[in-house]
Image 1: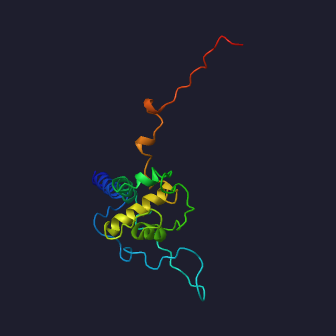
Image 2: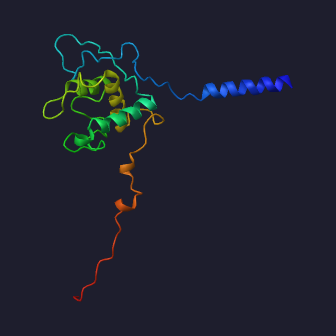
Image 3: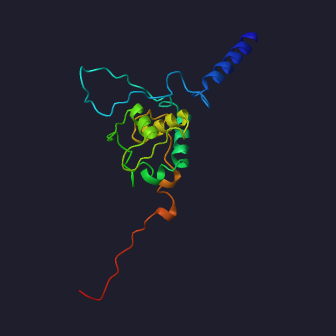
Length: 177
């Protein structure tokens, strides 16, 4: 009987510990993940070639962080220019071929510093943690994050809504032949 109880307690303990999908970091970022310093826009550089460290978004594989980025994307009105990633006034974000680069540190730099001809600088207005969450969400729009971490499609993009369905009608016959 004791062996059954021990096995049951051990099973419940392992089950509870295994249920944690990811850590939710509400206020802090991992060390060294606050700024993307020295971001290069192109491979052109003077002098000898240098290796540039590849910076990963701290939320790139974190479903909660990406979903927070999705919420912030709407809250900060990124939707106004980039639509739901498909573009509009601003460029589309559904692929990974972007003028200023699709690497996490380049996206971070774009959000913080802004870009000519329309992209405003959000540096100092948005916390670094929120910028990295936006970076992770923007990466998810182009499929650069693991599928199990990527958020689902917005309800507004669903074609199952009756009001969005386009019914085909038969052409009307006229008396002319």
